[in-house]
Image (spheres, rainbow, N blue to C red):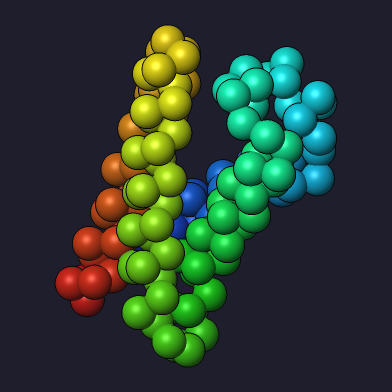
Length: 121
């Protein structure tokens, strides 16, 4: 089970580092063509979401790997679950159904890591 948790955490970290970095460094104008939802939020909120994604990506890997406050790993994963719930709500409100599949997958992976690490699997 530990291998499956590491794989899931690695996939989450890779995805969130990539998209978080893009949201953090690119302006709202450059994101608009690929991420229509940015229209609904100020630039500072979009960048904050990117920062949260980067923090979550680091949080699902580093505390458990280094054994420094490892309880932060399942907490980070739980925060990513919340982030995905909010993302799903935004996409549903905007009727962007093409995004729901990846959002649900990320939610399930984050939930798996959160539950698995809290349970000590």
